[in-house]
Structure formats: structure tokens, C-alpha cells
Image (tube, rainbow over all chains, first blue to last red; front, side, top):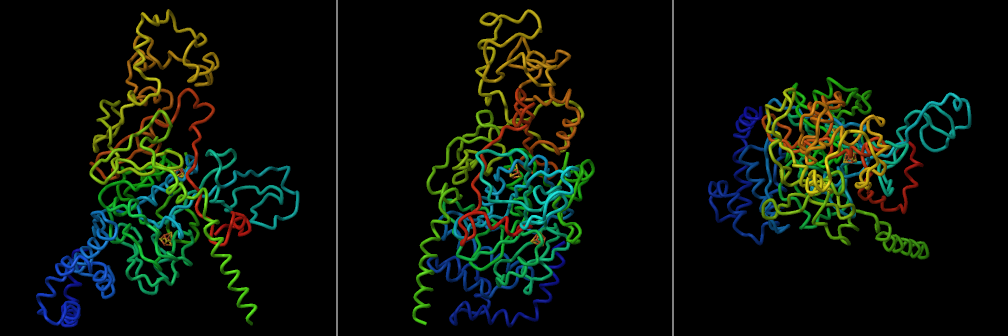
Amino acid sequence: MSEPRDKDEKKKDAPLKPDETSRREFLGGAGLSVTAAALSGAGALLSGSDEAEAKATWGEWFQKNYRLMTEDEKREAVLRLEKRYTEEFGKKTTVDSAPAQEGVLFGYALNIQKCIGCRRCVYACVKENNQSRDNPEIQWIRVLKMEKGNFLAENMDKGYPDPAGIQVGGNAYQNSGVVLEGEHYYEPAEVPEKGHFYFPMQCMQCEKPPCVKVCPVRTTYRDPDGIVVIDYNWCIGCRMCIAACPYWARRFNWGEPNLPAEEMNPVTHYLGNRPRMKGVAEKCTFCLQRTRQGRYTACVEVCPVGARKFGNLLDPNSEVRKILDKKKVFRLKAELNTYPKFFYFMD
Amino acid sequence: MRKTALAMLASFTAVLLLAPALHAEDTYIHYLKNKQEPADCFESRDGYSNVTRTEAEPGLPNVKCSNKTGGVLWWGDPFDGTEPMGEMPVEADYTHEEAVVKPRTGQLKYYMPCTACHNGSMVPYPKDKNPRPLAMHQDIVPDSMNLQHGQGAIWCLDCHNARNRDTLIDHRGGEISLNQPQRLCGKCHGEVYSDWRDGIHGKRIGGWDKGGKKRWWVCTECHNPHTVQEKRYDPIAPEPRPQYPRTRANADHERGHGAGH
Ligand code: SF4
Ligand code: SF4
């Protein structure tokens, strides 16, 4: 899929060449010939190790939007980042740039009756995706604790409205039915707790993502496998996407991310879990650094009750498709026509 | 003017001083800093499904364990300690992938193996299959006369092989390995078994892709058949809550917001 597009871009790029070379000349210094500098762009960056970060920053500043970059430019950016992270975190770091696989549309399913609210998925995600650990503490998955509710005939006509919360039926003393009023700071000794169920939420990888629609610099977009990605280098931190997302899925790095070197996961992807900088938005990407290599997401693998399922929506034998065939399924806020590819199901 | 500026400065300092206190205990970073990652952690049931943390490759651990609860938090090597699932009833559609399981026999808390005692001489073979109170293993089943599995219709020797205690037995007398309890459980729980085969019920880790390698989790890795009647899944301690927003010392604001954030 991406091949012809890249070729097109190369053609489109051709007239821009003089501009490109002058930029290279500028970057490479006056002493170097234009072609040599262009060819050895990555090489030059790899040589002076003490300057890796400065050069990386410099290079990023002049970098195109990832979506518009040629294969060569991508390779160069990736090498630059690998060098930078390896130096910064003191371990061999790889930055993958694998594109979407053909014939794959990722989907997710979560058994809402199974989830026990243990939050292991939250931290598996943090460990996998290099989120900031503290101040700001960033977590992409949020697990809401909800009360189980019932419509009880004898309570229907009682009471006055409850000032707090949204009441759906019932009465002032007992909300009936399920209210979307979850609590995510719960901390009991053991889960699951009696009379409650748990509702994990993360990016739904909408087919029509409002976050993409509002982004003024188009740094966030939908890849062909359905994953909504963010090119952190182009994010200007306006937080429009955060306001537009109806699922509270995006997070913002208000401060310099705090990622201890020994905790850092060195297997990264440019559009996924590579370390972020201050002032950019981020969110779940279905662990594309894993899933584009055929592996399950970290949250699927860690869930102790097997509530989480993941697979290719275009493969009728995949687990998600079988769930869509056999189970009662719903999508969150389906009425907004965002077409989430995150399905909640029941036995 | 001066006074307000001073007051502002004072309150600003107060906020600065308060900030660390608001983020203190019960947060991830607290456990990260104050407790060592255990070398031994459990997958779903403590004592039954434990993994020892090793290095799969230099610098890459096979698992990461929770400093707070001792649960597995991340898999570097999902196939650590697994072996091919082996023979399965024909309906199992796993021909298009390589299915592996983690052998249960070495994992069981009480497995020494069972035949070390139940060999027919130390503990004689039972004369018949009639229920009687347990003299041992009361930590597993406190009162064998009140075992609730199958609403009391099922008891020990309906599943455990009297002649070879290292194995299970199906209702036609076929021996079943403790590594493949699904072949026994599925005899009664057909619907769940069918979901399990489809990958809907239960857990699989490894690869989603066709032709890949997958670790299938079997029934008793998550459920304790002796207590499953009261609790389908043994309760476990949850991981730490997220940090409160910087200006909040508790979660009260959440309720005030109504529909949440
Ligand atoms: S859930 Fe939110 S962040 Fe994710 S694609 Fe939809 S709108 Fe965007
Ligand atoms: S790990 Fe599974 S059971 Fe635990 S909170 Fe996440 S989805 Fe729920």
C-alpha cells in the first residue's frame, strides 16, 4: 500500500531538491560538498557521539512530517533517534519504522464481565510504552470502577434528585441502571469488589477519529491498519485532540517526561513507544511496535483473567471476529459515529 | 499591592511544598522507589502459576514483576518454560498455529508428585468411589463432604484418577494429564470449552498473527476447581491507583464532576 505513495512522494520531492540540498549544506557545514553531505547525513550524525543529542534536535527541527517523508528520510530520522536514545538511556535502543501490514485492520475486544479491575493492563502498558512514571504520571489505560445497578420497582417513585452525578432513572438514594459515573482512584485490598464491575478505557482507534479531524498540523492520522498514530515531532501541543476525543484517551506531557533509564523499554517504534518530549500529546497505539510484528499487545498478554482479545478484523478466523459473531457486543458512545474498533462484549 | 504579591508568593511556596506530599504513598513511583522487584511472581493464581524472573536475552527480562503485588506486569518472553500442547480432541482448531502450554505438573503447589504418597502402599487404593471425609488436603478442600463443584454432585475421584494420582480421569475412564485439564472440564462445560477453543474464553499470549506461536492458558491456570463455586476467580490485590491531579489530595472531585472526566 505504502509503496506507490512513497514513489509519488519521491517524484513530488524532485523539484524540491535544490531546497533540500541547500538545507543539507547548511546542516553539513560549508566545507562539505553538497552531495557528500546529503549522502553522509546519517553518517555524520553517527560520528561525533558527544554531539548526538544536539544534532538530533537540530535534525528533528528541520524534519518533515513523518507521513510525508521519503524512505531515505525515514531511515535517517530513525538512525538519528536510535543514536540519541542509546546514548541518553545507556542501552542499545532500536526505533522501528515498520508500516502497516497489508490486509490487516486491527480490532480489540474486552469482556466486560471478566475484568476484575486489577489494573495490571495499566502498568503493562506503562512498562511497554515508556510513559512518564511520575509528575506527570501518564497512563493510557484508565480502569473505571462502576456500581452494579438495578431498576427496583419499589424505589421508582422515591426521593429527590441527587445533586452529584448524572442520574439515569431510579431515585435520589439509589441510582438505577448503570450510570457512567466511574471512579478510577479506587484502592481496595482486593479486587473484584462485591457489587461492582470494572470498565477499562483506552484509545478506541476510531474509524472516524475526531482527534484527527481537529489536529491543525496533521500530526495525528490514521494508518492503513486502522491505528491512529501521532508524529510527536510535529505535535505543537495545542491539545485540540484531547478536547475532541470523546473517550478521554489522550494524555499530555505537561512536564519533561520522567522515565528512569533502567525502566526504559529499548524496543521502540517511531510512531509508538519511543520516548516522548515535553509538550506533546500521546495515547494508546495498540502497541504497534509489537502488533506490526505479529505479537499481541502488552495489555492482552498481561491480563490475568483473559478479558482482553486482539486481532485482525479482516480475518474471519481471528479471535475478535469470532467474538463479533458469537457474543453480545457494544461500542462506547456509538451514537457519536466515531466507529470505534474497540468492542466490549459479554458472555 | 506588595501584600498581595507576598501572599501570592506564600501560597505558591505552599503549593510547591505540598506538591510532593500529594503524590506520596500508594502511587506507582512510590513502589518503584521503595520496593524491590520480586524475583518470583505469579501470573493469575499465587502459588499455582509462578514465574521466576530471568534474562531471556542480555538486558531483556522474561517477565517484569509488580513491586506492589508480585503479579506479572509485562512479558518479555511469553514462551518461557512452555512446551507443545500435544494431542487435543479433534475439534481443536489450532492447526494453523503452533500452540504451546506451560506444563502444570511442575507448578502445582501440592505436586510432589502425588504418587509419592498415593502409590497404593503408603495410601492404599480406595475400595470404592463413595465419598468420605478427607483426612488430608483440607487446605484444598476443607470439607470434602460439602464440596460444591457441580452443586455437590461431583467429588474427588470423579476427576482425580484413583489408580494414578498424577493424572486426572474422564468419565469414561480415560487418563488425562494435569497439563490438559480442559479435556476433562470440557466434558461438562461444553459451551465455555467451545469459546475457549475459539480463543474467546481464557487467555492466550504470544502472537495474534496466523501461523504464529501462541501460548494457550488452560482452565486450572485461572480457576481453582475446588473453590470455583464460591469465586470463579480468586480475588487479588490491585496495582496502585493513578496519582491524583496536582491540586487534589483525594478523589472527592471525581464524584463532583458527575459523568467523570
Ligand atoms: S479514541 Fe480518542 S484518541 Fe483514539 S482515535 Fe478515537 S478520538 Fe482519537
Ligand atoms: S488486566 Fe484485565 S482484569 Fe485487570 S484491569 Fe485490566 S482488563 Fe481488567
